Length: 375
Image (cartoon, rainbow, N blue to C red):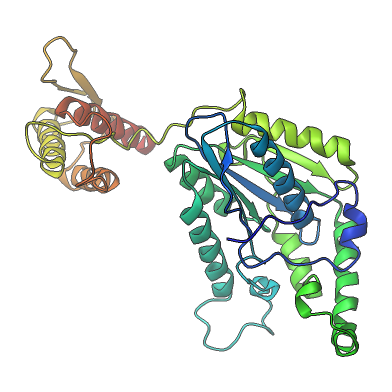
């Protein structure tokens, strides 16, 4: 672990972006444990914006802000991480999909970009826990990629948010053009001085930059994976930036923090006297499939009642799709998918209720959702 970076002033974004900007160190995270006044939670902040729009500068400002806020709070201990292309030594060239730059026999035009995202995903997954605060600095321009990160955070029962660094296309293009000019003379400057290549912010090739702007999918606060969404503008001064960060802190770690629940199709796994986990899972789902095949009418549709072992509870109801009969292949396909979603906890200590009735309730809800989508 490396020491925390030096503070970055809030109101010097245009000046920093138009001059040589230093890259982040290889490992940009704190080893010092910071205290927090919450019992156990982690947070994921996804920074998004146009290329060369100031994302790294804003991410470093947010890092400094969170370091201060964390240091002001009380136990338990907490860690802060900043993950980026620079910290993983990912070159800007991996995002270049132009035919001239893609080598022959490459498995796909964007294979290098997929590999880069896999490296970022792995780095986030390694540090995302109940004692870590993670800032992901990068393009993050694909909504499907942001959705994947949202699902990972949700599986960890932790909130996530988007920090949008907003500026005009013209402003971002001007920054990249200046960096390209600097790159053209950087080698000569390094020959005449002790300046290293790592001290110069890497530029995008012009065609690559234009392509990334064209492909950029802006975060939409109406979607759950892009919400909550916070925006920092190019013109925002120190006071306005701090207000935005205050709102982000309240949403992620303060009183405005929402309780995150995993998907309902995932069972809280515990122990059951009637058999081990996989046995009970297979037994209960097979029994429900058998009841559906036996009780559904020749014309399809209708309801199938599934009894519970507890006497004081009402029977569960499977609502079959109208107008068609559900066959064994479809039911077995749904059952296998459900088992695949819920078999990952085999051998783990109990963390919830794994009784047969609980499994039946979740599987019936899963089937009803699947049948509703087919209608």
